[in-house]
Length: 246
Image (tube, one colour):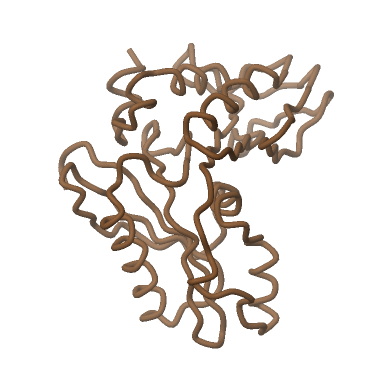
């Protein structure tokens, strides 16, 4: 497919007893060089008919492959909302908290129970997509210098909090970010009743977070979140490079 597609993925989980459920779709269209920066659920501006069709297609694929455990089925979606399969990630993914927040399902716990041979404790009809969740990947990179990796020692660190805010990280004041691995140092997730509230809460949380000693992508995320294209949900996988980078 040649064009400016959206990137939509479906979180699934399947047990050893023939049960397969999806935990709805995530929109991962805010990307740079095919690397995801921001994920959200549900996907904005995706018609319900297409949303349901994508999720059902993911379940059919997982069931047909006799796959068990958590996984993600990924698609690109064109301007006509036609969707095309990309791949299956047969593992838990960075953005799984987005699905956890809107579904209320603890995916890590469910993985362990599935591996132990237990059946899923829920059925598809038990699940509802409640509210809106957004995740920002906080990377040790300098957006002002072409997203140059920025390893070093974190001199001061303060994690954001409050209603609807989840912060997954391993770092602390005095932690040394090594240059050898992926540059992500934290995942900031918010869950609110509406997308507008989720955006507002995420912007507040990004400002509240304090990381001194290294550069991070937090400020860049705030630029994205206040851009009219993102607010209107008209962005695509090439939007960051087309609109926000020289």
